[in-house]
Image 1 (cartoon, rainbow, N blue to C red):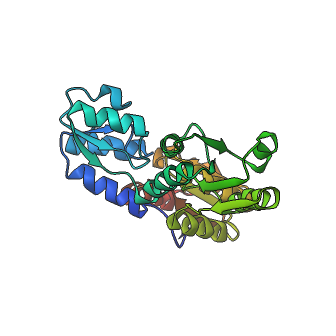
Image 2 (tube, one colour; image 1 turned 90 degrees about the horizontal axis):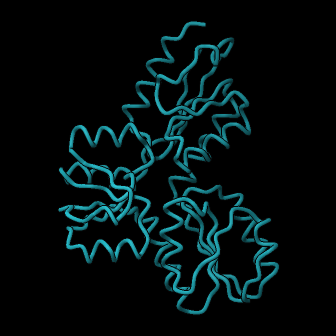
Image 3 (cartoon, rainbow, N blue to C red; image 1 turned 45 degrees about the horizontal axis):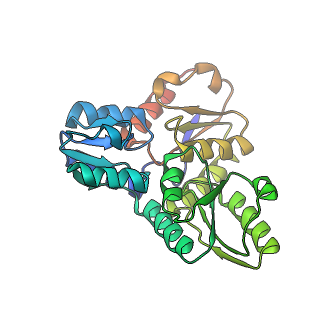
Length: 276
């Protein structure tokens, strides 16, 4: 069985930047998990004593607080500023952008719509910057029961599928007079999703590596599954099962933006030793 990696996969710019910041900030605490990958979070804890707090309310007495890649709410940021702790901002610049857009568009009287998961920390953070509030939607269907003004601004969670975003944009532009569209899906997401789709079309089995709580990894898995029914999402090599590879000729591999190379290498190593 051949093993083939997607043309684009793994750590994105924002995650690489955040990991470097954390490694240079020994004995610090992150506000929420720095990234959505438990294996890498554990490595930072063991090697650099970077702890993880649930939220900003636990930062009392903490000397250095790292803001996670997904960002935090404006209220939590103000809590940190008032606590006197040193703030180290590891928010991905691609996440900071929709925060700024929501704040500006809301102040200019636009109804702000966010395409994303309302429970995701990135979306919660972005939503908090809309001065007059923002509507979070997950699909075109969600728009049918919402009444909006004729001035609308829309942004997207950085890791969503572009095809779904375009459907929502099309609906808004055909139902409302003025729609400001801000495509805030990051370039790495585009590239990883396109590469996963391309590889899944030729693979007999697809392995998607990444945190199961990672939005971009779950999107990759969904895309792979559309073209390759035998697609599996794993966090590490220990979750691999020999029967997945029986009678397979080509195993495709991709990985989420929060998945480090050392995990990918372990998965490849174990797959290469499987005999079925």
